[in-house]
Image 1 (cartoon, protein in one colour):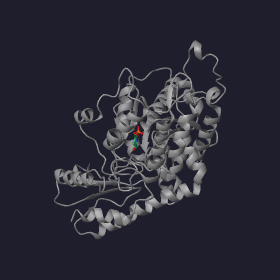
Image 2 (cartoon, protein in one colour; image 1 turned 120 degrees about the horizontal axis):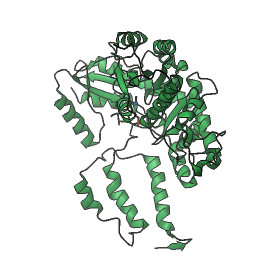
Image 3 (cartoon, helix red, strand yellow; image 1 turned 120 degrees about the vertical axis):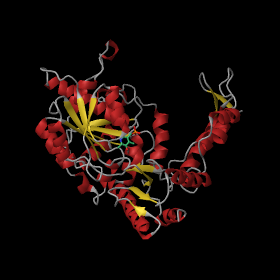
Image 4 (cartoon, protein in one colour; image 1 turned 90 degrees about the vertical axis):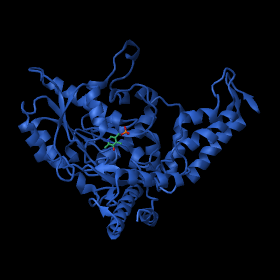
Length: 455
Ligand SMILES: *Cc1c(COP(=O)(O)O)cnc(C)c1O
């Protein structure tokens, strides 16, 4: 081992370089589609003891990572990974993630991370502009939309509680459909608020009419409802709620409008899909996960507030050791439930800066066009039924006569062979195949070949 003595930690430079070389080659070649989860008992046997009093050294620890750890993780970025919501980070974003790690930036407060926070804010401003928000809007990056939804709902409730001193409602509530992402109900439980469930329309959408009917039909007339959560791209079906109608009702009733665009918000960048989002310009907060469909690596959620000062009031942490923090500056720590944070928006910023917004728009359009062509391909196959024309890039279809077990068996076989990843779901209580596309390198012909194995 060629150890360079530089400070306290011995450094095996050759082995460390191997790690960087490996990262570079992983970025160039992509992951292996046959890699998959294994039971912990098998992993324990294969990886052996790694945490020892003397340490096993860089080369040996890395060998176990390459041989055991990586093959037991799913390659989320393969073009035929169409399960859940996959990921498709650009080469620039992935490489830059290494640079962010190497820079050891504390991006919680301006004083420590000004340059990084400024660059992140440029990327956020692009998103705010796509939504048609004023330049006074702003936010920060958090790990995921679950965290983003949490921060936005905390800000919304704080704002409502500040405005309504007497009489306090018995319970604070949010309005959402059953199609809202599971994280919305998880966040409601975490902050101890109730959910007023609004029945969705026949396409699974929340509409202004349904919202008003639910508020008016509620025994206490919607009292205590401080926020409505609209989905800009439901996870299960990829449909966008009727944002303009919801915005109208929210404004009329003084309710905060939060738009969860974790997956679908990316399509704001695509001119062909932009009309679906009409009304988002009136929302109070908005989240989109660049790690889903904006070509950034994990973990990266953009959280935006129309009036960031309302979020600051809710989130600022006070302590004697924080007294020197300049509150006149843009401190991401004041905008969500966090203090220390990695500059996790920087890989997204670097990718956007590298390729430009036109190429980003073209990438999202490519995915939308591929999805429409696959919908046509499903329509042409007599053994398949398309459930609905897609709004965005989620496709739901059925193989008539197949049970949930048949769907699961088929999807498991494809995964084992490393052909493709797709996981069934339920739509209106029936077993349904679901594909979710986010990768501009997904080819229609390759997906058609997968479809034909269902014949
Ligand atoms: C994925 C998703 C979430 C959760 O996002 P995480 O980044 O996994 O926390 C929330 N809402 C919607 C609509 C999603 O698709």
